[in-house]
Length: 260
Image (cartoon, rainbow, N blue to C red; front, side, top):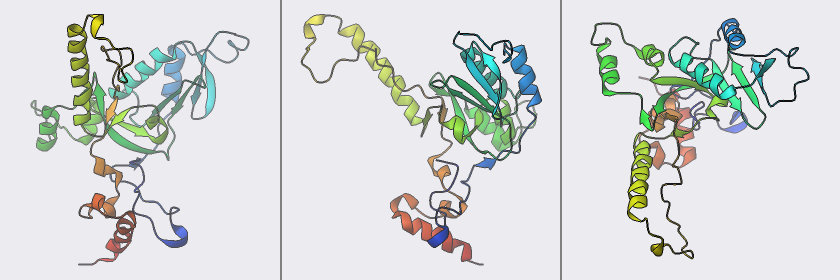
């Protein structure tokens, strides 16, 4: 989703084999893994020699597929790494993947990964504010400093995620999706205050009252726009969501032939 255009692919033998990038997808150019390894060693990474016979639960740490050692507090380590990435102290293209079931933390700094930008959500609210949009339109901040797309990543408003890290986050489609859980949580809170007596509780009821116990989705990111799933050719089709799927594929192929 969002990495490769679902419509822009040839018909026939090459169908699905020749792919085209979606509108905002980019290919990582790679960065140095040395600073990441140095940081890990400072933040409690234990080498394999030290930890060869340890029986305690530890998380394996991999950098570009190479097992570097183990760590005892991966949650804190990941939070720190993500904060540093959002402040541009760690390269924005570095991928941080935690596999809880396998007890692994995988970091990637290599080139050739498909990444795409997403808005960051904190406490069920977008970090993006109206001032950021205004600064982008002006090209400068209120203080007169330059402000462009890359400054959004440096100021922790957007984040570049690759396909593997995308599996570990919760992405909402529109900012309106963030509003529903907030209202839901507020309603549940007011209901729990009003329905305090157990006389109204029906054990046979199909729908049990929530009483504020069931937490809604905790979103971590938000799509920039749902149409960013499409590539260049498919994005200029009017109302592509009202067409049969093959019609979009045909137009994506034929639109390239138009001249003038």
